[in-house]
Amino acid sequence: MDKRIWLSPPYVGDTEEQLLLEAFRSNWIAPAGPALEHFEQGLCHITGAPHAVALSSGTAALHLALALIGTGPGDEVIVPSFTYVATANPVRYCGATPVFVDCEPDSYCMSPHWLEVCIKDRLDKGKKPKAVILAHIYGQVADVPAILQLCNQYQILLIEDAAESLGARIGERMAGTFAPLGAYSFNGNKIITTGGGGALVSLHREPVEHGLYLATQAKAKRPFYFHKELGYNYRMSNLLAAVGLGQLTRLDDRIAIRRGIRHLYQDILTENPGVYFLPEPEGRFFTHWLSVAHFPEGTPGKLVDALEAENVESRRVWMPLHKMPLFNNCAYYGAHSDQQHFDTGLCLPSGEALSAPEQFRITQIIGQALTAQAEQA
Ligand SMILES: *Cc1c(COP(=O)(O)O)cnc(C)c1O
Image (tube, rainbow, N blue to C red; front, side, top):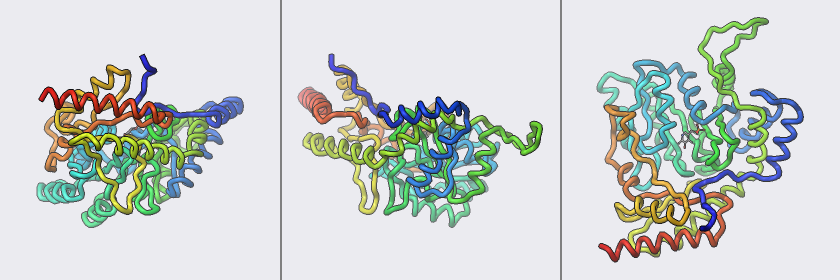
């Protein structure tokens, strides 16, 4: 059997190995050290965010963002329904309640229309939301200008979950740098990885400084241990920052490769009837971290099996979060575009090492499975 093709495996090289070895030999084997500072500077340089703090995960970054603004029991936080569970879990960590908002029919990201409906209804019910977290999904960039405008109008703080979209942008402005607070992830499957990690970025110095303080157990500057605030152990290790530093050097190439993969899939797969891809609107630049193809309803599950039989990993798109038992009874505002995406969408292997012959093989397996299904029907 052919070697397994994974959905989005890490892609590392000699640079990462060299930098990791240097960090190791320098004995900065701790959540402190020069690689961490360089990694944060590199991230600021690449994203245009003036301030960044490197953390143990993207989830930690989102939790810290909510903690920084004092989210607590009784609060409501508006989150997208079409996203990874890690966007919503930190709301629960704070004892607060997520309220879900649908995505757009032609995008994976939060719908400004349904966001406004949601905000108005929560206000009518006498509950002013504590924050809105938007998520940039699968390398897309959300309609942040519209969402930010709503948040400004209703005076609600916006947090950007850019875990999946480092490098995506509107004009020159990067996903993650529109809102007062933005979060990135460097998990093993993301466009760059530290083998597990994340970062909180901001346009302002204060929240990032305070974030660093809270991420290192909120130790007061005294000659003995003294704590006024609830802190966390969320700092990234210097060793992992060294890996991240290497990964950052090739971000543009990584994005170009992922975009190429997506375009090849699109060219070949759309020759099958009923197959489509969501558009990349004028003025937006998507990284296509994961290539997502849409098929006739009921097909994605069968394609997962057909690909698995050939040792190829694929993955259904996000199941709407408000339909998970974990979020039973949470409010939802939308028209079920999330469900429409779930019924039709499939994430295809998108790793940088994916070769053109491998991609052709994947499209062949899919084409055959679609034909077989059409003949059965
Ligand atoms: C990966 C991801 C996260 C969480 O990042 P981790 O580093 O795995 O904790 C958060 N939100 C979204 C949308 C993600 O895809």
